[in-house]
Length: 263
Image (cartoon, rainbow, N blue to C red):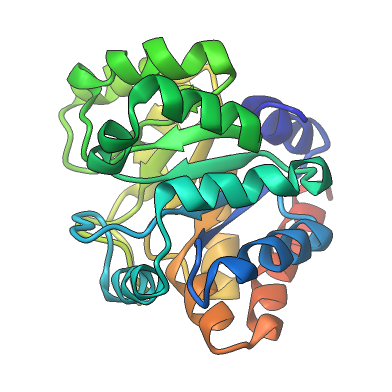
């Protein structure tokens, strides 16, 4: 399986944009993980972000928080998710990024967690409550197992910190497009174009836009700023409601964007 950066770069070299859907693992039970991932990769997504339910998700808005609560009610844990992924690893053809918080990782044990990620085919990790200054321990334990540590860049960070994060991030830079938590938005921050231009100048790896992207139109407009988009709450809602057509529409929008980018 290709690495995160390779997967996104391959799309970029073809003149296209990356599309990364976020799913809450176990929303509906552990049995939903395999069919959801296989259906998404069949649609042609670039990477899949696998969210782990947590009791205090400080970066998540109501939609993802409620999905996490449903998964927790089903007894879903970080360990069970990784064990489930490992069972059908050979069927997974797109890189997976796990999004979790530090407490579950610490409880798992860093070495055991790294080994479980390797067994599950995980290629990236996002831990939003571990700041850059404290992330070395994650890189030390996860990088030898082929797992990149993806850093988030907020709009409010000062220029020198943005530069450090852009340099330190692995796989891709997760560029947050709003001030606040995840969730659908009607509008985004001002001067995002300038912000993304600076990020792309500073970074040697792809820059993806995330947070608040929830409609096909936003997929196109936000995708034009960087190397692709990450869509979370809209995907989680559609999957919970059993409306895969909405998921297909979001992915289709990214494909239309890709086609336009090659004209």
